Image (cartoon, rainbow, N blue to C red; front, side):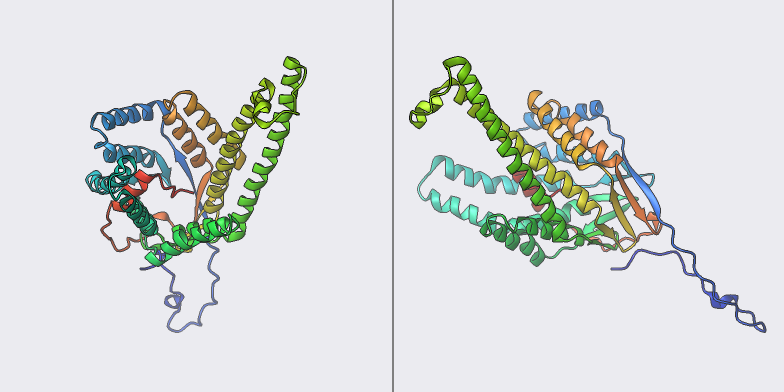
Length: 391
């Protein structure tokens, strides 16, 4: 593995004449930081047609077209994301993905059949599959990261991922267990371990990645999300109780709080207030999750480094990205999913418009690393299980 190629250094000794005195050392000019803004040129209407065709073909072929649909969707987004006048490419092989999909489909089809039909010994079958999944989960994440990185190309140069198996089990096994047994106190530490593993294992050609962030930044994001949830929950509770009192007073002269619990909820005002509070909690959970997603993306991008000479800079507003995420989710629900392409394009366009790549060298000077052949099994498992590997 070699570092990215720097501009050829100047040999000052060649300037010395045979008879004259040695020239005074000349200070090298300070390195100039080049800024490459990212851009996304996809259009909602154009992607909608691609998305609809992929959806129809996937349904007609009973899911066999899913790998091709996945590749075409990613190729569209990669092909419309530009940095330094070059777009990204997604070079995955759909046939390799199909083999992985079929293997994982058999694996979890067995689990579903055991749970559904409960034949003799179904507990052992279901338990065995669940145990195997838990043991293989970190390995599948690593395989997925390797496959995804290897399939990503920019300026004709493949990305790569060199994270170890042991690192995957620490970040996605031990860290997740610690988050559970600590009742969530170690959850930001798990987030940090997983982002650090993802970035440190990343390669652009032969240039290694480095995560300059620390657990403190992820804890701040977690505490902010917790404060948002608790504060919003208290506000919803107060407003729900107030609404119940007002509605009950308008209809029955006020809610009767002297009865038992079932009688209390049979009163129209209390029931409406409880439903409103429940919907409010669901909305609050969605907002908190969108905040964690947006803030983590911004934090990781601003602490990502490649080869010691390239960094990313995210200038988008976390609040604005949360608003986009919440609006997208509401639009998808109201449209029964038909606005999914519009939502995806809207978010990609905003993030790209506020992301830059800063480099001390030309992006064309990076050298290719050693090519490795990757299995599609991990990627297929991630897709089917909806494992979130993004930031």
